[in-house]
Image (tube, rainbow, N blue to C red):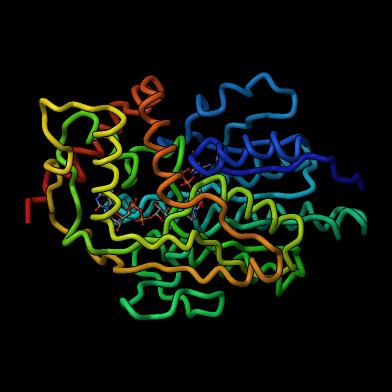
Amino acid sequence: MTGTSNSILVTGGAGFIGSNFIFRWIENVGSPIVNLDLLTYAGNPSNLVTIENDKRYQLVRGDICDAELVAHTLQEHRPRAIVHFAAESHVDRSIADPGAFIRTNVQGTFTLLEQAKQYWKSLGDSDKKAFRFLHVSTDEVYGTLGPDDPAFSETTAYAPNSPYAASKAASDHLARAYFHTYGMPVLTTNCSNNYGPFQFPEKLIPLMILNALEGKPLPVYGDGANVRDWLFVDDHCSAIRTVLERGRLGETYNIGGNSERKNLDVVSTICDLVDELQPNPAQGPRRRLIKFVTDRPGHDRRYAIDASKIDRELGWRPSVDFERGLRETVGWYLEHASWVENVRTGAYLVWIRQNYEERTAR
Ligand code: NAD
Ligand code: DAU
C-alpha cells in the first residue's frame, strides 16, 4: 500500500471551466495538478500554453471511459483528490447527437468512479479519510422554472429535460450512490451558466460576441425571454476550491451568480459593449444584427439558483457582478483574436452550419 501525493487530478481540464480552474489552482494553491483530457473539439491544450512548462502541471491525453488508462493515471500520480469536469457540455449538440453524451457523461463518470473507488480503497486510513472526489455538475438537472417559482435548491426534485441534462443527472446519481453504498468521500456541485475567457464559441455569450464583432446575425432562439443565471468562471472555480476544502462529505452544493438575465437582454448588452469597445459607426449599432430564430426543442424557460447553503455553510458567495464580468469577457475576446482563429476549425464551421442553417427566422 502506498500513500497519496500532494497532487490533484482534474478531468476535462483543457475545456472552458477546467482550464480556468487549473490557472486559478496554480495561482491560489500552487500544488501539482494533473489534467486527464481526451482533447475533444472542446478541449484545447493551447488554453494552457502559458503553464505547459510549469513543473506543477501535467497533461495526460486520454479518455475517462478507458478504465485501464484511468487506473494507470491514478497509480502513477497518486492524487489526494479528483475534480471531475470532463463532459460533453453543449445542449444543442446533445439534441443532435445524444449518444456521445451518454458515453462520456454516464459511462465515463461510472468508469472514473469505479477506478477511483479501487484506488481509494487501497489507501491507508489517513489518506483514505483525506481523499475527495468532487463531481462538477449543473443546475440543468433540476429542469425548468416558471417566472414566479422559487429558485432551485439542493432539495429540488431532479427533472432533466435535454439529453445533456439527463446524462448529467444520471452522473449525479452515480456519484451519490458511490457515497451512500461504498462510503466514498464524494462531493457534488450544481452550478448555473458560466461565462468568461476560453469559452468555446458555440455557447451563447462567446458566439454573440464574435458574431457582433464580425457583423454577422445574432441568432436568438424563440422569443429571447428565456432566463439564465450567469456566474463568472473564476467565481465557479473559487466555489469548487471551497467545497473541495471544506464541503461536507456526501453533500451537494448549488452555486450561482444571483444574476438572472433574459437572453435578449444579455445579447443586447453584448451589442452595446462591442459598439463601445470596437466602434464601427459605418455599420450602425450591433443591436440591428439580432435575429429571432427557431427555438431549441424542449428549451428550458428559466433557471435560478438558491446558493444560500454554500454561503451559510462554507462562506462562499460570488464576487464578480454580471456587468463587470461581461465587460471583461468581451475585452478578452477582442484581445485574443488568434485563440479565436485557432478554435474555429473546419469541424466548428460544420457545427455552426448544422445548428443554424435550418433555423428559419421567426
Ligand atoms: P467544455 O465542453 O468546455 O469542456 C469539456 C472538457 O472535457 C474538454 O476539455 C474535453 O476535451 C473533455 N472531455 C470530453 N469528453 C472526454 C472524455 N471522454 N475523456 C476525457 N476528457 C473528455 O465544458 P465546460 O463548459 O468547461 O464544463 C465543464 C464541466 O462543468 C462539465 O461537467 C459541465 O457539465 C459542467 N458545468 C458547466 C457549466 C457551464 O456553464 N459551462 C455550468 C455548470 C456545470
Ligand atoms: O445552466 C448550466 C449550463 O449552462 C451548463 O450545464 C451547460 O454546459 C452550458 O452549456 C449552459 O447551458 P445553456 O443551454 O443554458 O447554455 P447556452 O450558452 O447553449 O445557451 C444559453 C441560452 O441562450 C439558452 O437559453 C439558449 C440560448 N441561445 C443559445 C445559443 C447557442 C440562443 O438564444 N442562441 C444561441 O445561438
